[in-house]
Length: 165
Picture 1 (tube, one colour):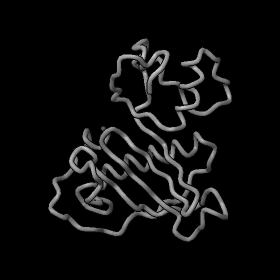
Picture 2: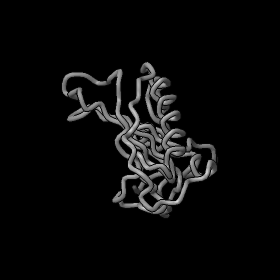
Picture 3: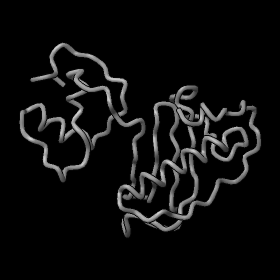
Picture 4: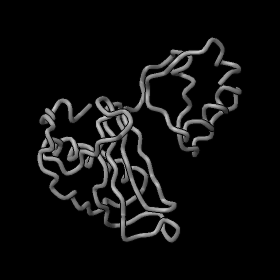
């Protein structure tokens, strides 16, 4: 972007979402962001007036499929409702674990780690975070069916500290 508050280029390492774009544009134009608007302006990050920012992103997909995901700087965890159609409803009472990616080691999301013994703890941590975010968005806590056991797969066991990154 280029314009007021965006001259000189730069890079942010914080996780931002498209939902943050409308409040950012309003803020950059000097227009007060309505309290009911979802998302947050990234202008405090751009201006370096704030370093406080969320450490994960909540993602909802409800078009061709019904899915929910959480993304941190390191991990991406996804679950879907395979028995439901997104064109008919927006959410589900039951989801199935679908994907887990280590974005640090696999930025192109080529190796799905869901169901692997080595990554059960990280999946559990992210599942809990995702359910909390769903509840914050006004959804009821769903039943989550765990992924089938995918064995060891040659992966190192993730430490509890790594699971929370």
